[in-house]
Amino acid sequence: MRLKELLQGLEVQAVHGELPDDQVLGLVYDSRVVKPGYVFAALTGVAADGHGYLEMAAQQGALAALVQRKMEAALPQIQVPDTRQALAQLADSYYGRPSRHMTLVGITGTNGKTTVSYLIESLLAQRGPAGLLGTVEQRYPGKRRPSAMTTPESVELQAALAEMYHAGVKGVVMEVSSHALEQHRVASCRFDAAVFTNLSRDHLDYHGDMDSYFQAKRRLFNQLLPQAKRQGKDPAAVICADDPKGSHLAGEATGLHLRTLTYGFSAAARVRGLSPQLDLSGGRCQVDWPAGSFEMSTPLVGPYNLQNALAATAVGLALDFEPEEIQRALDAVPGVPGRLQRVPGAPGDPSVFVDYAHSDQALASVLAALRPLTPGRLICVFGAGGDRDQGKRPLMGQAVGIGADLAVLTSDNPRTEDPLAIMAMVEPGLVAAGARKVNGLDSEGPAYVSEANRADAIALAIESAGPEDVVLIAGKGHEDYQIVGRERRHFDDREQAAAALARRGGKEMGHASA
Image (cartoon, rainbow, N blue to C red):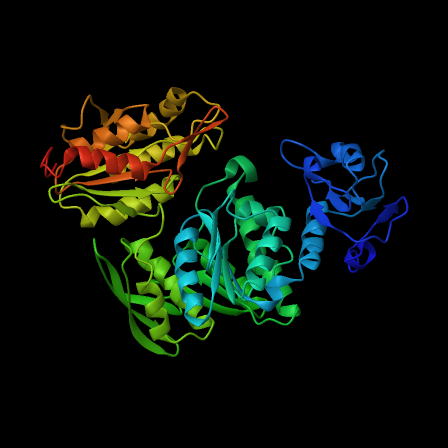
């Protein structure tokens, strides 16, 4: 595609220099990977401003640069109001507008995105090859790779969608983060359905406050779905009625004349779960919706996973899937990496789960899910990440102090902070919840111990647990690394838990009940 053809439809404020009408050979926003024939986009980020690298891009043969302000550099510059939005538009055009040719489902919300994405991927796969883009991985039949971020930058995103389309993929589900919405990474995606799971405190280090965080999430519904409708799709807004922000979003979506389907257990839900039944083998409920009623079940554990299954069910109904197809899809997902994922043990071992919960509400939810299913003690290993929102640290401690019988406070991804300093900020929350600090886990709860070494913390919890106890290892989930300083070291909670269980050998240890 030639440069002038690629720029058609783009809001251009000014052109500085003479634009060549050459073939565009690539789009990049990192000056270090510019090659001859590439267009370089000068993005303004938190740590760096791409406008300072235009001369480097010119020296490496860039065809032209997208800018928000004119700079002194030896290459043509295309000035636009927002380089991120412009780059998303160019990437969509450059890669052949792939989302217009596939069924595309986006999921946003603080918690549940990954689990719901796996369920919807299974749903889409009932009618043809399906793809997934999310926190854990990017995959489609015959190809999978780990994800660098929940939602890729627009260039990588459109490239991935195009790759899937050319491989024969018919439907794609993607997690849409608040960062991606704020930064216009998905600005040119045409969604057939969008899901809102919930909103709780997270990412305030980036967004600043809860209202700004919610406003970012809203963009999927009040900007991108109407955009898809204007361009020929009939998108559906699938919104959790159990979340306080859900009713606001649902009303707004209805006002925008979008097909709106709420889900949940509350009376306001159009796709409503009734008579829920839960145990360590999964959950089941009756689903009532305007067109009828049917039974639904999932092997995933906990009430919020039953709610996640309702989200996928509502998407299925919005996309005209039959209840039988929806149930086959739910049955095909026995577990999701790092999302209340069971670590197998031997008879006499405690039940051990690994979960990605890393906010106070996520911790409260997962502990509340496990509490009624736990005949003995509920033990939680957790910590807080470094270089992230410090305000949530005591709240996380309080959530665990309330939800667990015993806690092991440890290090998560300390990054450039002192792990002990992070733990010291979490500790007041545990104390506020009534937990007392002890030396070992043979005490009556609520109580907690501190062990900065995460491997030792996991081993301590598992070795101290009895056969009727449940151990939750929270915070890192699917991650197979720990970030210490700026170094990423291999560390997998699931591997550590499996090793600790192997050392137990199924022998009965610890207390069976508090």
